[in-house]
Structure formats: C-alpha cells, structure tokens
Image (cartoon, rainbow, N blue to C red):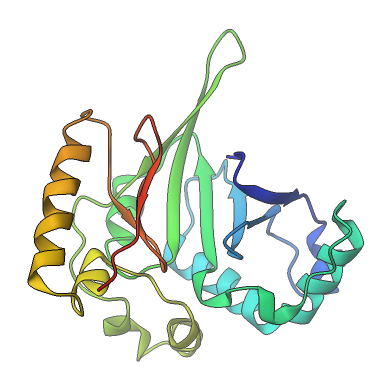
Length: 217
C-alpha cells in the first residue's frame, strides 16, 4: 500500500490517537497530497462497510487535533505538521480483507463515497497482491441516504469525492477534446489502466509511466 509518493506511514495505536474514543482502526496513512487514509484489515466478513466507514470518518474529522499531535510525535520528519496543511475533505477509509461479500460490494455503490475495498492474496513466495474491489454499479450520491443519518450527514458535509466531470465542467470545448484524445491514448496502453479523478488532477495510476493530467483553461 505504500509508494514513493508517501510522506509517511504511521502505525498509530488508536487508543493513543483518540484517547480511548476510537479503538478499532489499525493504521493511518498520510500522503504527499495531504490526504489522510484510515486503513483496517478485516477477517470478519459480517460488518457493514458503509456504517463502519462513516463512523471512522466521523471520528477522524472530530479528532483532527489528536491526529496532528500524534503525527508530530511519531513522524521521523523534522517538519511539524499543521492542521491547515491537511486536506481533510480528501480523507478516505480503506478496508482490506481476503474477500468481500457481494452485499458489501454493492453497498459501496455510491459515486461520492470515501470508502474503498481492497482484497489481499498471499502466495507461497510471500508475495502480497492487492486488488481494489469496486461496486458493480455506481449511480446515486451518498447524500441520498445521508439526510436520514446524522453521522453520514456530518461526514458528507466535509468529505468530497471528485469526478471526471468536476474537472471538465468549467473548461472550453477545445480543452475537452484534447483531454479526450489524451485519455483514449493512455487507456489504449493497457487493459489494466484505470481512471481515478483526484482534487487537483485526473490520475491513471496503473499506467506504466504513471500519468497525472491536470485540466485547466
């Protein structure tokens, strides 16, 4: 799960981070783009990915000062992290498990849900392979159910998941045409290449040369 783009990888005891309020989460990842990831390995298949993920995001957002304090105490870097340096709107939950049920896969079928599922396989040579599991259908925004859930409502007010359309809506047609041609060329480089929009750009993370495309006027 780590890469050269990571700023630091912290294995933080949750009780220490949240002073006893959050004892389930296992790992926290903070990357160069100032995004926070909460990572948890699951052996039990009987859990609600949406409810638990929303609860984790809510507790993370409510305890920003504790996260910053623990980062500054644990990180090897001499740089002291400040709260405004973290883009809390891009916080994400990552559940890792040997397998997810069909129900769990369908449950994350919201186009703006800040929760990811990754299946892990271990082979005889100790090789670990991670594959992201995506919902068979992604249509409705999470806000359709958040209005009836106080925790989900608070989370969706702060967490933002960007789409390709977000980057294209304010650019000229000639820019859209250039981008469309470039995207087509990149995707034709291999069948495993995918498109992953971020806040600042559209990424093609599986691409062999790691292309990120920033769409501007």
